[in-house]
Length: 460
Length: 167
Image 1 (cartoon, rainbow over the protein chains, first blue to last red):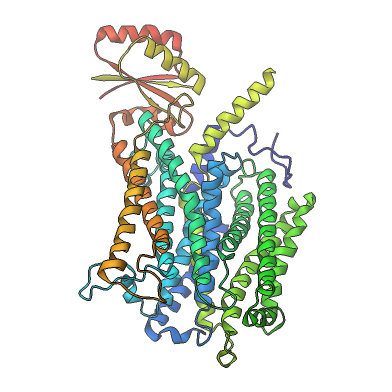
Image 2 (image 1 turned 90 degrees about the vertical axis):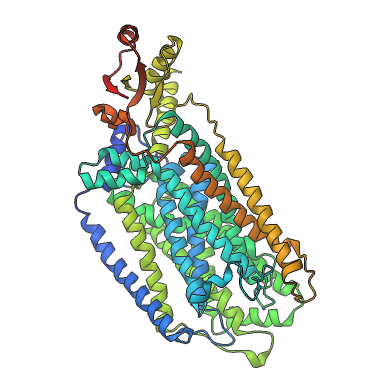
């Protein structure tokens, strides 16, 4: 039985001909290739060009100040904050797949886990630079820490913005530790397959002398499980706290108790969309169609559909509470949101995030790769529009009509946004090139289990 | 001391051999496997350390914030109480988590005595397969008597490869 050209939803999560040896050799060979694939260069060069754009944009920002961005009274939060939220959502989706579904012990998570984790890592990196850029005086970023100082001043612990700083710091550090912990045994596999001295040394150093001894496995299994159990609430906390950044402010359109779960729903949706956008090309380009099968696409599409429904519920309740509550400013702002100058942003978010994903109810479309890719791209854009709508539309109509104003991103806003896309893509491509793209030790356990199931089925 | 490294084809053969060798009381056996063996008991003191570190981090940071807001620098914001404890929870939680994760990560290296880039077993030619699909057992050979006892057992265990190395 081999993988069909077109994905099917009734495929197994792993084909029976995949053995521990063949999988290890194939995946290690990708990391150990002498020269990178041509497609890799074609993707990598523009990504690095965008990364350079980020460096230029940040450099000019540090030189000239925040005035180069479009932010001004009353819209003091613009691209930086909305893109930060957008990236953090993408990262969170990766953690949900790698940690939450690990705890649920689902078989389809294993082969796409490493891709989801890379997404979490570089999504968090892309998000993490925004708050620093947005500080205005980034060299004073250390004021966010509590440290002994001559003025005996302390940070404002009661502000969600400070919570956010610590949440992000914890999230980035914990993501790196969790990712590396799962990677150690696989780096050992690459080390043992490497043929040149430099690679043996490099992978050897990063594998830290992992040999698969009984003690190494015993502790690894215990600690990795607990780390996953810790990461799952952390990912909910980070995005809830990002939601509280908004909900904690007495601003029209923000001051709502539904924000924390609303943001987590958005994280689910954008996470599944980006994972699909990474898995679909990689399974083809790296010839991994027999471990990332139609079954994976089917499951991810169903999860995308589910999170789209959750988000639709949040949009609905957002509208409902506006009119159920008695605040006139809230109602004015909402009417401007759905029918004013930023109307396309609101309806774009609705169409891309809630309406179009409903196509995935149809089983045939869940196997149709072009449709999935278009829907996922739509979701990625839609999620960005949603954040634009939350950040910008809410701020441009504060309760006092004398303070009303408009907002547009400048060239430097767009340059920074595209630059972080470059950062994300370069990171993903480098990890695809040098790190095993599949969690090998977990795949071996899956192969062992599938074989045992198959032989048991054969006997009965 | 001399050691002997035995390689097995799959987990079933490996587990059977391990049981036989343990029953024969051949000495301290080390295993090297491509995945955690199914029969292995997952027991480690590190998760407990993670829990303790997490609780300590949470309480310590919570206490620090309470100290700062109540004693060191009370600040009246909108008439909120100085000891606004619910607002201390998120940062205390995050830093508690960070302490737990760092403890788990460092604890792993301490518990496994890693990084150890070289071990005598690395000289064995077949050993690279331990990170691929080979299931290995390493047994100590203390003297000639132990060697002959091991050889008797080996005949029935049928390992894929046998190598001797000095430890």
